[in-house]
Amino acid sequence: MGCCSGRRTLIFLCTFQLMVALERQVFDFLGYQWAPILANFFHILVVILGLFGTIQYRPRYIVVYTVWTAVWVAWNVFLICFYLEVGGLSKDSDLLTFNISAHHSWWSEHGPGCVRREIPASGEHDADAQSYISIMGCLLEYQYIEVLHSGFQILISLLGFIYACYVISVITEEEDSFDFIGGFDPFPLYHVNEKPSHLLLKPMHQ
Image (tube, rainbow, N blue to C red; front, side, top):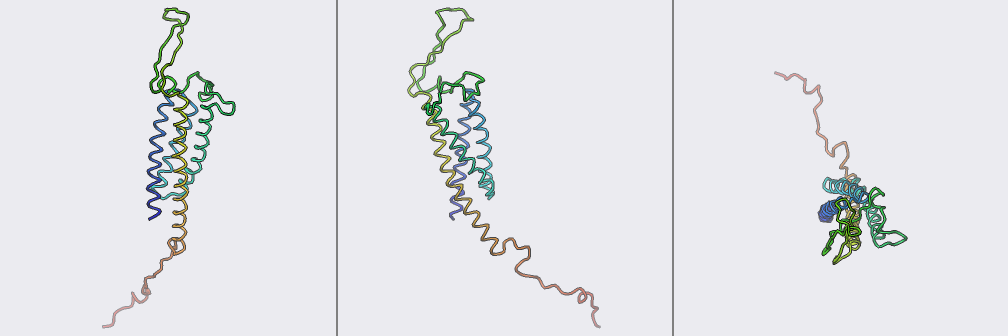
């Protein structure tokens, strides 16, 4: 009973993690955040692997999911430090885009209540003139939205880690007990008594 309830909970957590990761992947694509895009891609693959292992009773797959969950928590802790500018990190750097582009989080211009305005440089109205983008009226700064995303990911991952360890231990114990009672014994516990071949070929007396 404990294994079944633990498996159901882990299946639910993996499914929920998959949905949240896909949502995050969409917004990271919109913001051209290449490092988070790669991290999300591997995360989605491992969560699918963990979900498959949980459904099919494959503890090795769940172990891979458990190890990756610890890495995923560390990655999200780094993102929190990055957006809060802890340890000399700067949210305005191009670290998450691999210095390929100067894009920042999609939420920096599309957060709740944000109003985006383009202001022409030096008052020029030429079509080729550069313009500055001004963001005003945001109810919540984009870095805090990203921090909330990462914090939520950490919470789900910790729950998944706990239940994954529990399911692995239960499945391992069941396999050990199955081996102990002869579940994998190549010789059955009972034998069918077969008559010798020479008795079967003995002619009947008239």
